[in-house]
Length: 307
Image 1 (tube, rainbow, N blue to C red):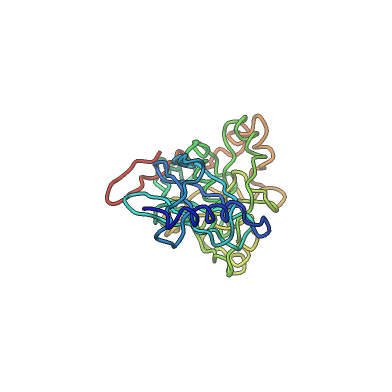
Image 2 (cartoon, one colour):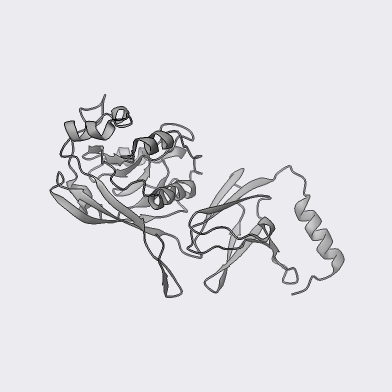
């Protein structure tokens, strides 16, 4: 494909690169596909070739990111699975964040867990991660899964009719490092995504506070509490466990809420150097996540293993 004319090509590129900075936004695209992809600036003009971004270097697979300074409404494209897919810079945020899934809308995470005070082991649990709900949150969760962060993690806050919270690593160095490794909040949809039992979000404590701890909404949660979940930008949902009432979640052992609301495990003590020894000594029936991995991605009937 050729430019319509050398002059129009020059003016188009100059206009794209040197548009007045006022009104410009940042767009970060994250590649969650199992292969690298090259991102192009795209137009609706069939006579205008696409312009490769990042000096023609593709975005790495399984979590690679590229940040671009652009204008709201600018369109970008990438090729994957024999098709061309598009990304449009949103005008709803000064820094837009989007996840590349080649037309897919979710990614499955498969875990094995204990239940019933660890009497039952190796029980399957499937989490549907839905990035458009919370792109930064979903991406952080998938990165942590790939890093093995949740393997062996204690379900340290199980409160019936409310939530289960977990995410503090059994490795002292890891949990210490990740405790302050925060991500930015996600855009809150209008209207917000409605919570229901089985939905998952990060357990933030204020603006831009999300690290590794997440929660699952329990069955029996009151409608009032469901309405409250997700009202803050650090609590946008990123995934869901379907039919949670028929999963091991229902039988996770509860020691009650954490202090000062109950007599369950104190998360501050779990973060200490002997935190998991503390759990074994005082909460021996606590259940655990055994292992998690990102499920295979199916593209055009071909299964590509993504670990």
